[in-house]
Length: 409
Image (cartoon, rainbow, N blue to C red):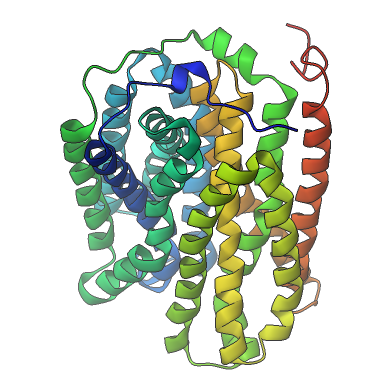
């Protein structure tokens, strides 16, 4: 199976290296704002429980509301914004994100906060999808994977730095200020994109029915399924890492941020690794990443007994983040005229993994298999992702008329 070239509508007049670096930094800053907001509720949970007078599971529903917003908003906003230039659409999405997080900071009660988190999640997937397309259009064809990994860098840095910062701010001056911080970073992103993103960009207009028709192809759905299922293992371990460290490793709560930072550090490294692998292997990088992840996840329960083995294991689990740039780049190859919709739906699929992993891990823990059973569950989902890859690779080897639409047009 040969590597594919960038779709024609992603190729733009090359920018200077300095201009491209500024644009990628601005796009990445938006990812940092989104990642900080998405994961902040995990660190702010005790403060929000006290502030709203609710239980921990109810605060967990705020995380689910945000994820639901991502799943709903990614395809919807991608289609609605299909006739806008990428510059205009990105400015609108990040401005909307700033407003959604300001609403979260000002929410007077739990119900309004639930609604605010859903609204805040709406632009998430569309922003990353359009940002990835803009980054590829501004970069040489042979560096597509690297460009996407740089856009995704902000998201992984949010796990490493943004989430601990939001947690500290919540403890020091109140949890609402963490969302004010996110809103400020989002507005800074709007300013930088207005300054550094080219104004003379050609509008790649598309009709919603054309996008949906092009999107309804088996290779697109296969790539999304790999992300939704294969990536669930990371979130399975991530979501239950804190109680695992307390109940199995036997450390004090003060060590928990270090364990979370380990996953963030692995995510940053995995993000660059994924871009590097795609530029050299293309779609074939998927089984390499998932098989490596399955090995790490199977060994995770053995590492949980000691802090000094657990911390390196969290970094290794975080390396699974390499799957993101690979699948995002591959979707651009197989999406045809549904570039924006497919790129945005990629993040909806990963939020589906964010819901599936904790749910499966919770079933295993509830069945009495122990906190470390999350590693075995995660390994199983990674291997299922490899099976989905094998199916997708076989589909791509078929003639175009056999590997095309899922249903007759």
